[in-house]
Image 1 (cartoon, rainbow, N blue to C red):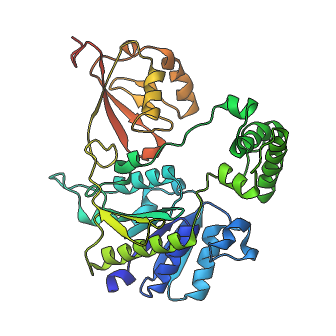
Image 2: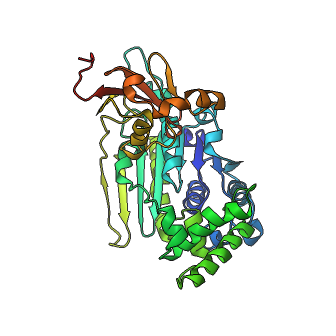
Image 3: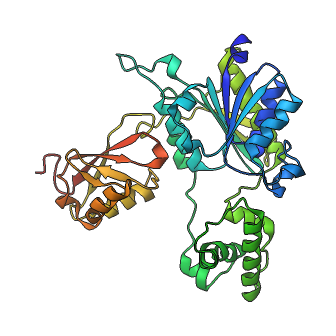
Length: 400
């Protein structure tokens, strides 16, 4: 167990699943060095299942409070907290860990973390991954009575991006429905924080972790619901809509956490065969859980070097191409794009965005040639770029 004792472990997230993970790592009694990072602060609604927190901790950092509790109760394991966004940490921060275990509750943060860990892999002269640069990534997630755990060996097994198709994109509600014809409690809540808050507080962004801010949104949503005869607006629902909270069940968190920590111990100590590669738990169907191999996606933009091809009319605008990259299989958030000869559109810095903004309404035929390779970058991929070849309809790669 010396390999486990000497390993530095990163826990990402100190919420419902993160609290369980920290507890399980401590109860193993062999883990010595842990770092936990989380952006959130503690709300009173967290206390029913996030058992490392007490009433006195409300309003304080989750990472700092969880670390303090574990350090006091389990002195054999030292937990160092970081309160902040995972995106604020650079590659040198992540390189120091032997394994990363994630208890994140949203897809975008997991995509970014997956991209970061995959980017840390180095290759030898033959193009094979150097084992010492591979940091195993154990990802856990829960939703109600369902949960999953998976082991990702960067550049060897499938990564999180390979399974993105399994996550249904969140459906957007038209603004006109929210503003004019609300039908459900969620519409009233959205009206309060999307439309009313900016009017009332134009110079201040809504803080979803602030009890006073959330109380204001709840009260405005309740007033709107009463106006339209809609029932069901509660403070808990308001929290769920604003923070996109998925209902949590403590027993599901406990089960998934145990599986995740078990995989961490196995991958560090080589004491047993590790998970290959995905475990599903369906608590509403019974206690049975099954495992299966999630195959690596040959066109994955993160863990493969595939060049993607699109065939479009030459009259397609650059803005339409970028929108397709956001709405299609890649689900990008804020893409920038360059060709081999020039920058087509770059979101940052501001000066470059202003200089290239005029290209958005231009047809692709005025900006590039058919078959030209483009490089697409996006915040969800960290430092990874997407290689894209656009062919014009009716023309080949040579423009003929």
